[in-house]
Image (tube, rainbow, N blue to C red; front, top):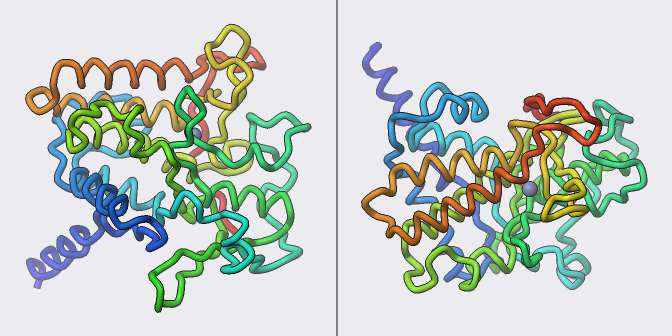
Length: 310
Ligand SMILES: [Zn+2]
């Protein structure tokens, strides 16, 4: 009996892999295949066993392997939607975003995300992971919709396409953990892949998966840490004035850098020297966006990751 129970537990946990993420049928099928391929690579990833203690700490896991990394992602990413999902046409014709409930009181009302200046408008709440040229790679729309809803006292719902003749999945956004990630034009853009001569190289997948981990972190937080929203980079920084820096030690840029670093460790034989160098530059870029001293002059800390929910 005991053995059976263990076996069934194993089956259950084995089912919770990164491929449980629902990809909108609105994503072109070739792109969908590529995203599924990346998820499969993560599901079978052989992480090196000498994980940095800091990675384990900020990920909140005791060991890092394909299972724990996949579970971590799965907890924070449930849907991936197409780049144009929120186009005016789709908003009007397909009512992609609906108001589910109005006049709702949200927890931690009146507590603004730490990084927000009072004069900011809600549009800056929608994080977008951009590359330097401002090309959107991915954004966490679920977290953005939760924040916008909190701002408006409304619960929003978003429809995720399941294909032409099927009823769309309605995702009611009652937490930043709704886990809706929107892909951007940059995700598979040749110019910004690690190796554009070999689109199927593992290094390209590692880079995209690092971005997935970054975006997933935006599904965490409550009150002032809600969504782990980015702050304006300080004067003197390459990205001064852009909302592309973190004022904490465990936010999206720290997670993205740490996970890319862990995956790079396992790529010694499979990645070319050039690919490894480029991945290192990407890691350094993310790390340079972590402000160890906040704009208010205090040392940056680990923010509370507990997700807010209605
Ligand atoms: Zn971000």
